[in-house]
Amino acid sequence: MTPGPRHHPDDAWIAAAAGGTLDPALGLLVVAHGAYCCTCAQRFAEYEAVAAGLHCTSVAPEPCRRTQERLSHYCRQEETACITPSADGDCCEKPFAGLPRAIGVLAEAACRGKGWQSNGRGARFLSLEPVEAPGTTVRLYDVGPQGCVSRHCHEGREVALVLRGGYRDELGRFGPGDVETVPPGVAHAPVADAQGCVCLAVTEGEIRILGLDGLLVRAFRALRLIR
Ligand SMILES: [Zn+2]
Image (cartoon, rainbow, N blue to C red):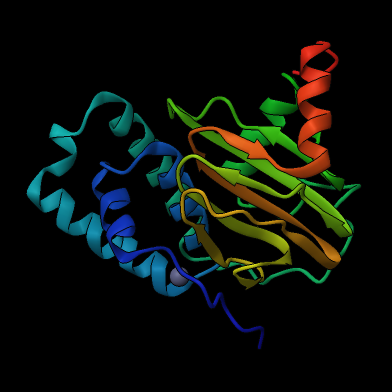
């Protein structure tokens, strides 16, 4: 039997997501984690039942309420089918295959917009812009075998969910369904496992790419060669 995730979202986030009061981007990540983790999916359902009893969603701000409806719909589809992590390393050819449905839908929409952008060696990302999260960056990273995301830090917190494969960085090793929280200002440089990695990252505030990669990005932006 494949072991489940070892790193889980904060219980307070699960409660807030179920009540419709969590930041929509983080809510998406928390619910997507539930597709890999029966324990957290069950906690979500319990909190959701409590929130319904308290009529919490009736006083949630409008964007949160819409997100809650979207996430609840997604959760019902996934709650009886915890994902078995795939050993399939074909993440470059089929980046969305086998991902939680809500993530795949957002990613396909993002492909029709800005599309994939390079980030580091063997790494690329999609900005999932439809998520209503002012001041927050929501990206889907697709990193090839042993590829790495450029060393970077962030103004605020960064929370990542591994959707397929795995990676390691200065804070540990993370596999399918694992959630990593990187505190504000902490630099890290994730490196994918041998089978590559697809993950969702929710980042608060500016992302600053460090070192030579950062100098190149800033130079290319100044020349308007990249956005
Ligand atoms: Zn969990």
